[in-house]
Length: 386
Image (cartoon, rainbow, N blue to C red; front, side):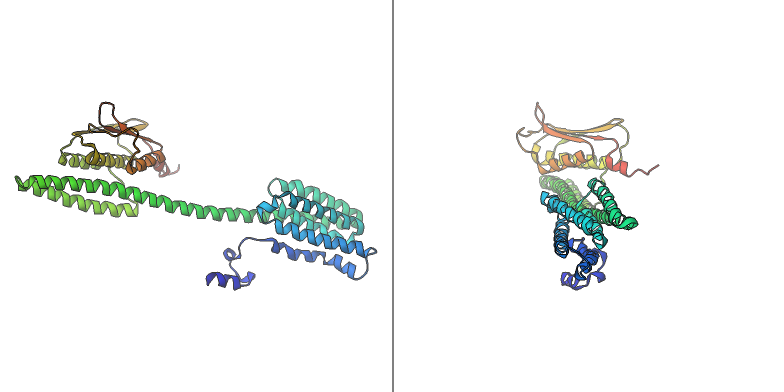
């Protein structure tokens, strides 16, 4: 109904965004400039009415054909369009040289056709020779009236070319804006799926490990089992908070907090955690990315490795920081595809200008190495301009 309502509105009553791009029909009313030549024929003032009539008919037909093809890029750049424009130029010159007077006004109409077809560097290459030719022919046939003919030809060609080029630019900008909006939606969906995978994968793994620990401890040490249950409640509440923050997109991980959580979860699963950290404080964006690496690596150690020891080493330098996570578990097959968690992490780290490598250790186990610049692109964008 909204589309039908827009179609029913007269063009002058539509808002600019409802009018759409110009088309060939918008250049057809300018043919009224040739009414002087038609009147000259009807009043019998032309000594060669048949030749003049055929010429006017050919000019109008060629003009309509050219301007209707000018708004389709494929047709506009086709050789047939340039042949038609050449024939239109020849007919215009023939009418102007042979009859002069009102037939000189076909030059501005030819300028409209030239301006509708040419783009970019072709505009001055086509317009200036046309203006000079119009000025010379009109000067011979009409004396000082050539100034008006030359000026009208120049203005009609340049203004038409500029307006149509601007219209195409606006059309491209609108298409680009729609593509950017679609890309932004896809990126947000990808971000949310990654966050949800990492959050729930780690949290559920911790809950399972602590539940198993509570089940084993309950028969012989009820107090220790209750402590594990309290931890399960705390982990669940924290997971709810993190999921809410992930949905809103404002979650910034703390590397120290994530290392403490990994240490606690691994200890509950009977895996000895070893944490080494050196170097200066990191930017929040860098810490957030490394926190995701710690979370995913700890989750994989809990769920798949069968390890008894897991080492986390953070080595910060003046330009880059490296996080290495190594366990002594079963490792993986070198030919196996990495999981979705590590794949998503690799994409995130690469987007921040870093690298992430993962694979089995020669002497047994699995290693994840993430390197990031101390100052990520995201943090540079947040710096105030000088």
